[in-house]
Structure formats: structure tokens, C-alpha cells
Amino acid sequence: MEREKLAQSLESTLLKPETTLDQIRMLCDEACELQLKGVCVPPYFVKEARRRLEGKAPLVISVVGFPLGYNCTSGKVEEIKKLVNDGVDEVDVVINIPAVKDGNWTYIENDLSSMAQISHLRNIVIKLIIEMGMMNPEEVRQICTIAERCRIDYIKTSTGMLAPGPTREDITFLRSILDQGTRIKASAGIRTAEKAIALIEAGADRIGTSSAAAIMGEWAD
Image (tube, rainbow, N blue to C red):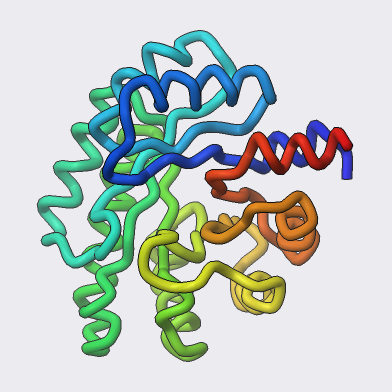
């Protein structure tokens, strides 16, 4: 795989609750140096990431309803509005996991539709974190069907907080059930160039990782 393609697949992620301002600044500078696709940061740090990356290539990405997803719909919509005002380019929103497990698909559709509408009205990309490691195949199918009806841009596999990260087989399964226009972000536990490339080859368009520098360093070796 060409270096540029790998770098442009990586979102350098730092979402730990103990994250500091200095760490966010280093994350942004590193993303520029390595020519990565973007940085994924806590909502609290979006303004600083935007300031640090103003006029530069990497995108500013943040999370909504993270990591459990059971925030009320109106709260998630307001989170998105605030992130847009702070300068975000893309949002990664967490599925309402209890609603999925309750089989309340009407609630899920209303939730996703509301978030997708406000995101697209504000001209930002929306990714849906489905926490795939907690879902059975039929739940994944149903989530993806509803997400595509709501015009979600990406299906993202995991928060990295609650369940194991994706396997190559997980990405192949997602690719087999999604329309070609719906993209995939693989996230959680991706720490080597070998795994990142395997997931990209299986159909992932983006990789969310806290090990972007190490992955790019491996490529250089």
C-alpha cells in the first residue's frame, strides 16, 4: 500500500478522559507532520484542535453521545450544533445501545434521522458508531438498514471503550451488507500497520487509532 493512501486512511484518536491540552496540541502537530486524514478529539478540545489545524489539511473530528449512546435525542442534536460552532468537520455518534437491545427500531430511526439531518444541514459528515462487538449479526443488519435510510455517511465499528475492536471478517461482513456509497470506519485495537492495512483491504475507508505514529513508523521501516 502506498504511504499516502495509508496516511489518508488514518484518524489519530485521543479520547481518554485524562487527555490534556498539551497532548491535543501534539496530536494535531503530529497529524500535520504525518499527513494524516484527521484527528478525533473530545468535544472539550474541538476549539483548540480547530485553532491548531486552521488552514491545514487534517480534519477535526469529535464524538457525540460517547461512549454509551443512551443520551436523549435532543441532547445529541444540541451536542452536534455546539461542535459545529466550535469548528468540527465530522462527528462520530454512538448508537443508543439499550434501544437496540430493546428492539425499539422506531426510536433508533428517529434518533439517527434527527442527528443526520442536523449534521447535513450544517454540512458535516456523520459517522455512526454501532459497537459491533456487542451486537449480533441481525442487529448489525437492522442498524445498517436504518442508518442508510437516514443517510448516515459512515458506519464505525467501535468506541474502543466497551467491546473488542473489529476483525477483518467484521469489515467484510459490513461491506457485504452496505451500499457502496456508505463508507466504513474501523476503530479500536488497531495498533499495527499490518492490521490497519488488512482492514483497509477488507473494505474499511478509515481507521481510527491511537497508534497512528507507530503505524506510519512501521510503514517507513
